[in-house]
Length: 106
Image (cartoon, rainbow, N blue to C red; front, side, top):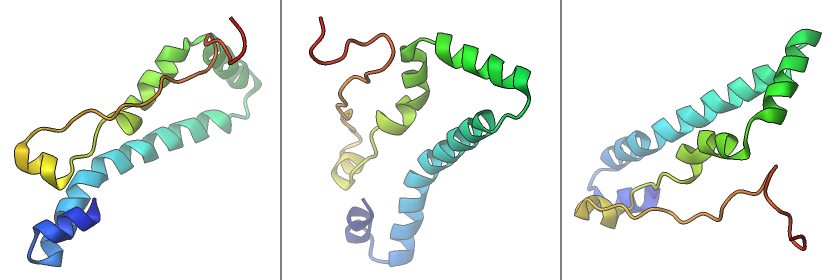
């Protein structure tokens, strides 16, 4: 992606600004989700830990996946997509987790 932007712009400064504008929102979301998960993982209060474990255990897999969709499903525009104004979706295999059958079982 950075190489695309460097190719499209005459000045490297312009390319870096565009690259940052594209990448920053996703990076900030990744940081936000990471900090939230870290706070939940580091709970020391026994009641808080039990509540966290209960919520995680009883939250459907699709809810966990939906929280991560902006990071893994939202496509980043390539230079060709940006010029045409059309960004095709990235195809990602469905997540497997609780409730999803494992391989070899029916």
